[in-house]
Each structure stands twice: as C-alpha cells, then as structure tokens.
Image (cartoon, rainbow over the protein chains, first blue to last red):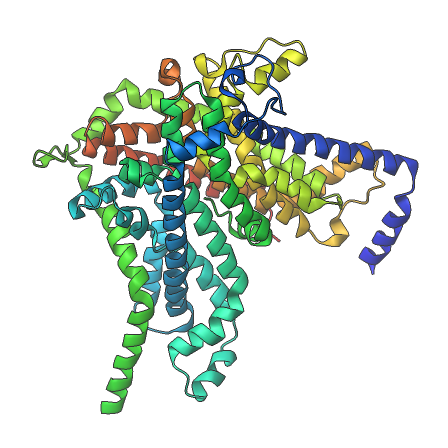
Length: 289
Length: 295
C-alpha cells in the first residue's frame, strides 16, 4: 500500500521543474562518466587503425585520418595472431566445458546425495577457496615440468578443468530444489545420472550460465598461469602474446592496440549475449575473473 | 544383508562417479600443491640441483631483505590508493544508476567493458593513455591548462597511474555489487525524489548507508583480497627505470621462481602473502560488528 502511494506521488513529481532539472543533471553526469569509461576504448580502436608514421602524434585523435587496416594485416601475416587466437579459444572452450561438467557433477554429489564423510570433503573444497592462486602456482609449475607438460595444451587446460568455486556455486543452486521432484523420478526407476541430466540440471540453468560465462572469461583473460607454462611461440595465448608483442614493438602502439582489439572482441560478444549471467554472478557472489 | 551390502556398493559407486573428476583435480592441482608449497618453504631448490633443506632460513632471509619490505610497502601503497577510490566511485555511480534511470543496461555496459576486458588489454591501454607525450591523459590535462607529469616514467607518479588504471577497470565490478545491494532495499525505505539537499543527505547517511552496509562489507573484503594480489597491471605497466618504485609482492614471487630459480623463497613469499590476506580478512570480520547492520 505504502509503496504504491509513493510510486504515484513520484510519478506526479516528475513534472515539477526542480525534479526535471535534477533528472537532467543526473543523465548529464552519467553520460559524462560513461564517456570517461569508453573514450579509451574508442582511442584503442582509433590507434589500431592509424598508419605507422602518425601513431606518435602530440594531438591524439579519436578518428584516424587516414585510416588503415595495416596493423591488422601485419599481425595476421607476420606475427601469427591467428595462432594465438586459436590457442586462446581452444583452451577457453575446453576449460569452460570441463569446469561446468566436473563442478555440476560434484555439486550433485554434495547437494543431492547422502554419504559418509561428505561434510569433511566439502570443507576441503571451502579451504582451497581461501588460499590464493599464488600459493599453488610454484608447485603446480614444478608438477608440470615433472610431467613434461611445459609448453603443452595439457598444462594450459588440465589444471583448470575443475573449480572449487564452481562446485560451491552450483551446490548452493542445487540445494534450492525441493526433494520431492527427484523422489518422483526415483520411484519411476530413474538412475542418478538420469535425474542429474534430466531433472536437476535443467532447474539450475541460471547458475550454469553464470559459471559458464565466468569460467570462459577467466580462461580467456588469464595471464599469470599461461605466462608460466606457455612460453614457446606456438603455445602463446592472446594475453601472453599481446604482452610480449608490446615488449618487442615498444613504440608501435597501432600494432599493440590492434592486437588488443582482436583479443577483446570475443569476450565482448559473450558479454552482450549473457549480460544477465554476468550481472547476477557478481551481484550474488563477487566472482572475479 | 546381502541386498543391503549390494545397495551400499552401488550407492558408493554413484558417489564416486559424480565426485571423482572434480576431487581428482582438487587433490592433484590444488590440495597437493598447497601441501607441497608448505613443504617447499623449508627447502631451497633451483629445479636442477637436489633439494637442500634450509629450515626457516627462507623466512629469515625474506624478512631481513630490503626487497621484501619495499615490495610490501608498494603493495600497501596500491591497496590504500585503490580501495577508497574504487569503493567511493562505484558507490556514487550505483546511487546514480539506482534513480530509475532509463537505458540502465546501456550505461551498465559502458562501465562493464573494462570489467570483461583482460588485465593485459587494460594495462596496455593504460600504459598508452598515460604516455606522457602522446597519451590521452596528458592531452586531456593540457586542454584544461595542466602540464601532466611523466606518469610511468617517474618514480613518484608511476604507482598513481597504475592505481588509476586499476580503478578504471574495477569500478563497474564493484558498482554492480552496490547496485544489487541498493535494489534489495525494501521499497518503504527508498528515497522519495522530492527530498531537498539536506534531507537527501540525511536519508542517505542514516537510512541507505546502514541498509547497504552488508554489501559494502562484502565488496570491501573482495576488493581487499584481490588488491593484495595485484600483479598483472604492475608487471605490464612498469617501465624499466621506475620498477624499483612499483615492485609488488606477487612480482617478487614470480621473479624468485622464474628469474632467480629460488623456488623455496617463492613458496615462502606466497605464504607470507597469504598470511597478510588472512589476517586482514580476520580483522575485517572482527570490525564488521561495529558498522555492518544485518536485519
């Protein structure tokens, strides 16, 4: 009742001059702030389209004149950005698929099955969430050397195939499903696997979408781990390759920015199609890539 | 009896089937390395010669070295500069976006593009934008009559440039948390837009802010933990000449493991970092009783 009355009164207030002034100021401020966020990206695209001799200019311009695709051409022809792109995509897709699969299966065991030692094992998962990646990275690198996996896809993919965080996230989602739903299926003679695939998973689609976009983003953007294990040219992923490119062509910002544009496009597409999953993920849990 | 036994076995089989892939990964790639890292702190190893037991010498050396203390102070400088800026700006933007703004998704996207971009892209773009001669930042400063500093080429301004770049990337991330918090405030407590300045401030200070405090607390903890682990942007943005003014803790871990072949020192440093993060999280959890209001 109260909230209804309040909405009504605000609706009338919108026509008051003071409120209109305030709304105008609000949109102006927001647009200015959004501009500050976006201008560097426009400049990134503009730099990437600039010819070599105009890159170092004292008056930066947001529209390149004359524009050229020369930097993109050079990246593709000489610097094998295509290979890095394929590596990144291959690693990100497999990592994401693996993480969603192993996490949802483990989450099912934790949320929908009763077994001895369950809480102890789950506590182990929670403990690992607290330890920062930097603690495990040195022994993990040594392990990769031991296996002879440095500079292989195994090193880039296998350690990322499971996620304690993903398991935790999906366990919480599974817990919200009422028991009666699967009991009915059990009586019909369905196995655990059928119930997992056909009954439980479809009910947690938002959770799965959130985990999918965040594990893709995490893998696509990863820098520290690939920096350790992908050092040969043929194994470079985009972030590592891009940083190295900058090291080699210090003043050729058009080249570096073209690489940045190429690396940003796929993740932007994923974001545009899955905005809600991103926003929900952060709002719920403060996931970080 | 026989039947019950068989049923138990079948049940164990199912549990193993569902759990094994994830648990194997956890043990091999996380729990194992955590224990190995703990053990490694007591040794010195360059990966070539045999392991050498050194007891607590790694820790002693770390605390006796000037490098560690300067890396710690740079990390703290980053945290102290970054946290208030990102929290205040994100809260401000969230408050603005919470005013029933039309085109919310569009504005949110503008703040979110840096969030989904990789740190490598953001760092390279930051480095280009803060270029003292050709960069966007000093050009913009010049337009309002300010002669910009040398940023990453100056020991004094390198860290501020890195902090500003990081704030620019993360505003959208923290803002979304605040926005969710604001939107969960019950309608009865929402601001009527007809409030004048003083009333609006009082409403914000005594009603909105306390109701938002669980979100603020959560965002603070997440940002603090992440900011102690700062690495990518410092590693990429630092210029050779100013590295001594920006080296952070994680960078020391990487350098010890990579460049100096001192795995034991790297492992010990990573536990020192973890201890810091752990201690600060504990302090935060203690302090929360004073300012966080749960319903």
